[in-house]
Image (cartoon, rainbow, N blue to C red; front, side):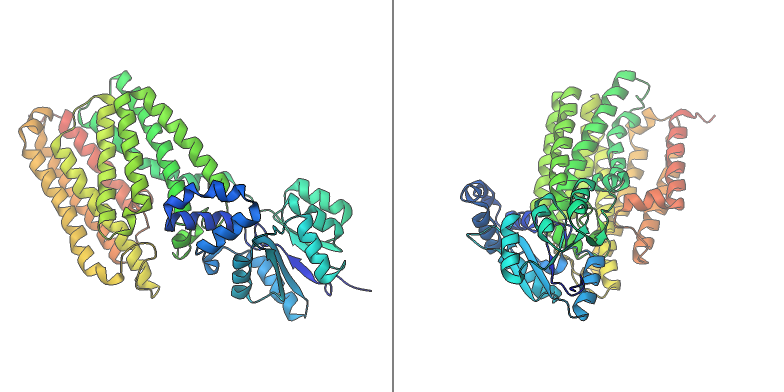
Length: 479
């Protein structure tokens, strides 16, 4: 009697061997390399799905070595291979991708895949499998499209299948093994939205607070709506950025665990969510005011240009990041119709330039510790640290100097009851910024200084103390 362990095992690729979709990833890579080609994609699709896949695969450079593979399934296949079982990769992906994956894993005896004229999916895949091995085979798949194949198979391996698909398979086919669907909880979605990054948008409140107008209800309502408009739009851009950077994120020691890089969330769902957030954010912005709407559009435009190209240029990326932070302050000023001090704008440019350099230096220190010399997708090398260190620290000190000049300015003397008390804030700034740079040099800095500041007890205490000192300087009159 033939046992399941001796029957040829046929494995699907997209959604099964890897949780991602290689066609969608290839399209993203192709658009990164040749953006105008996006306009040709609909015309390629009209000529047939098989031809569409072939054109995309022939023109893109998808790195199969960085794809997120299901390690538990791969380990199972390796054991089966050692026991002499025949393994066949059968996928609707184009042959270029399928052959590259097979060559990378070194597990498969045969590869069945789509060609330029033939889309190997569903019943077409079943015919190809039966032609190769006959009626005796076990099939590992994940989707509803695989049901005809499972129905004809001697046994099934279920990989991340929905309960509906799983129940349908169990009615007709014995189950050899099951790899349950991963639970994509709310925490994964919040990570994809980067809700913790919404703290950056608290900068919109700065003009209201520095003008000490936070007791005006209409302004508070406007700035609150502006905050959510910016936050939703920013989350849409974060998702877009993560989808754009899939390959480079997978080469990073920590970023490879992001929801899209690790394929915890499907790419198509990411695109859909980003589009919905963007529409909602822009609608809220238009409700706040037309001028604020245009500022948000400017932020969106600069962010997109940054994602598409500017982030790949050394130093230009951190300059743009510092300007995007400053733009948040300007946006807050526009939303509540409060003029922004030139001192505040100068201070923000310097301090956010320093924080952006903290982020880059942290990444380079991490690469240096892992024995690598250059970032992927950005024009930075670990040797650049000798320049970036003094540049970042110098920018931090420049921010403190600007703040010191602000304390002595006439407008400050008028606005604060005890402006000299702001020197306590200056001391706090020196300590906090120096702390960030020391932590960075020790390799203890998070990829995002904001996340570090939230988690770091010393940073939290210092920031709270600076806020209290600012309020005291404004309200407390010393005789």
